[in-house]
Length: 92
Image 1 (cartoon, rainbow, N blue to C red):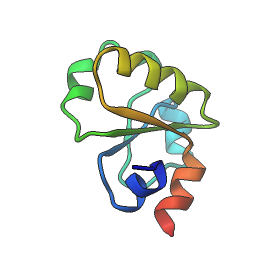
Image 2 (cartoon, helix red, strand yellow; image 1 turned 90 degrees about the horizontal axis):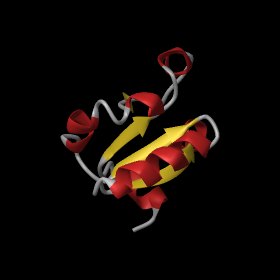
Image 3 (cartoon, rainbow, N blue to C red; image 1 turned 90 degrees about the vertical axis):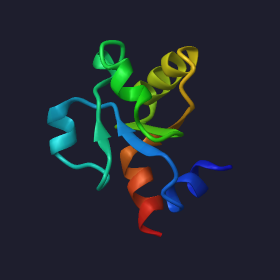
Image 4 (cartoon, one colour; image 1 turned 180 degrees about the vertical axis):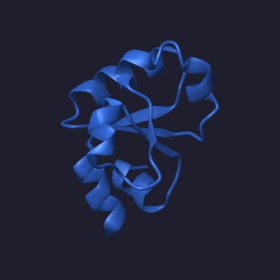
């Protein structure tokens, strides 16, 4: 299943790993904000979200790190890159 398909079919949960300030400046409607530096402390919350998790940030760097960390914890997730790209795919 492609990331585009996951987004267009509303499969899983979109998780934005940017800071709360960045998130407030614009985000994908319906996404959850869990900053990358809080993922370890909020793992129980993360594991309770509908999977697969579709991770995004500003450019894909932080969501890439978050994807790697969460996959090591057994979480079904993908790196979708920029929240703007996710937002665009959601609007199609």
